[in-house]
Image (cartoon, rainbow, N blue to C red; front, side, top):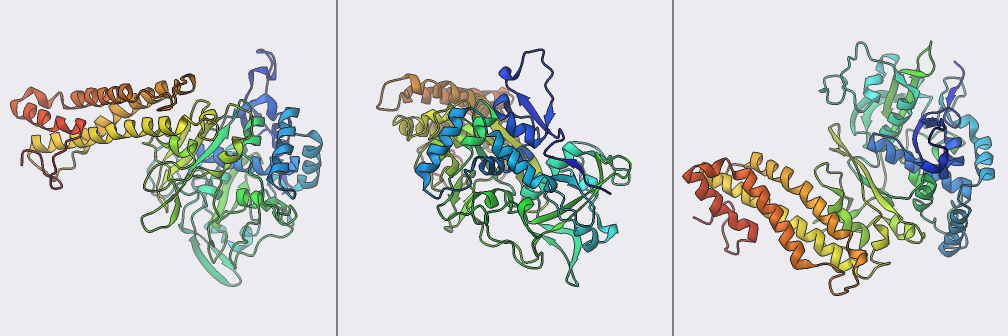
Length: 530
């Protein structure tokens, strides 16, 4: 079967066009190839990808391509010269067409999504799997799609049967291929035989369960420039290669090659090997897929990812902040804006923001991730965007440290107090101190946190308009009163049904003190009445 579906030219990537890209009645394609995406990135508002992990994965690929076509993949003269060159591209207002065309010409044959020829190199795939995996050991197209049920898994997003799987269109296959490379699970996989030895165990992808933070501009062009991090002086583009640029496929019997620069860190850390099998009659569809391990000896030392918040565990180990679908993005804002954010975990903001702040742009923060466990359990995508906030980063605004830190802390403080209050009220009401009181706790959280988020952003937007420097423009007393009021309202709504009885009313009033910070010491699980 000949090579088909070239990602560079065929419309596979969904995009949102910027208003100025054409007249309102102009017919603009909803999907583009990577070549057109780079050439017209200044006319594109952003990627129109609903699956958060695929969105983040494709951004990393685009960062690497942007670095290549601009020459910002090297910084031989140091970061200051690199920043000047990046500013020059920002001033030009678009990515260099000559650089894009030169790169596309050089690597055209490496961007075919399907290539089952003898010497084929399909993009981000390992063609050797057709021989190294049994034909009966294919994973199936349902396994490839992370939102489909496969095997005995429950159906959450869509229904499907392994016996009659629906073929997958090429645009969806591309996005799911990327999701597997970055967020793929550890554990049992299809058996792969290398050098006479079979094994069927994979290591988790480099971003498994992580939440990735990306600076975002008014156009994709601004977003791509803001997402670049200067390489070290020693980085050589001939050594720092993306997987589709490798002269030879890697040896699966050994450990993965250590990344040597930003492009390999962005694209070459996958621990999974995949091969898409196109439909024989319609090569725009995928009918099957091989999914297995990429390296027998697993991953070495994990390099620091420039788009994650890194924290220190109680044991002193560095780890990335995990995606949590129940945690709103505003609760991470001080870890994104402050140089030395508060917290016992000593969070450090993503390295990319250190360099994004050097651009004279109003940048938002786009958080993209996948709430998962380390193996096979997938819970929910996480996708959230802030208003333009990086202008209030601490390095640009001295008022940010007291304001943002205190405002976030207040909102979380009253959220914790509400949780303690409703749990305590329920335990007193049912006279069972071991009851988890989860139903009331979840209802309280559902009522409080969305309202607290709206309150936070309303007060945050006032910070850059206020000249008061003592608290960074923050009226701490008014903010405390507002968050307390939200907690009281949520508490009253959750406990309203119990308050109709004498015993319930007594329990509700006894536990209400938690909202104000009960100063009396108690043993764990003991009520104040004990």
